[in-house]
Length: 217
Image (tube, rainbow, N blue to C red; front, side):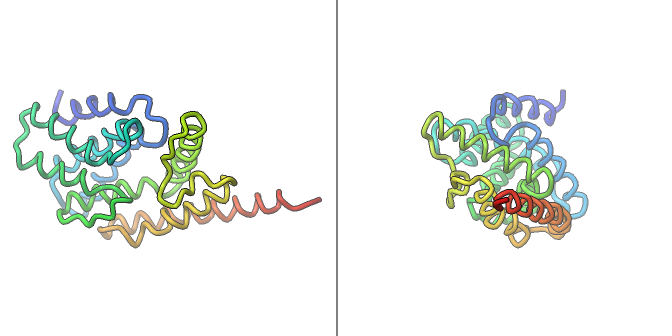
């Protein structure tokens, strides 16, 4: 088994039971997006694929302990790749990609690989899959707070707005609809434009249906 597939299996063990939208399917989609973008933008494919597979392995620890899953993920990635005999230059590049990938971190990556990973991770919050993931996450986080009292919402607390449709509208305005202006590569911007069309259509239909449902007969 080669390094990529060993890394995939390793990452999968960290995503078992992940309650929101950072499951292994997200990891595989981000890897595929990295590879698609790399075809046009360049960059080291090995670094990209390793970083994509390992960028969220610290999510469960963040759920349990708080803190920053990017830091946890970079530490776990470094330990794994060191044991696998990967050269230090590659490990450092993978760690840098992971440390700069978070949307909420607001970091501007300097390497092409880090820029591509950041773009790919953000693209997975757009389009039909972006809608699915956001609703899945909202439900999981609302239940988590109900059961444990743990508040894991974003900085604007859109997750916990009493009316979930209102919360979803607010979330769309503050995150997905701002993503295109925060992308690094032309390829990602093109993909984002197509995916946003789907999101705008869905939101218009959602609001039309909920508004008509709130009208008194």
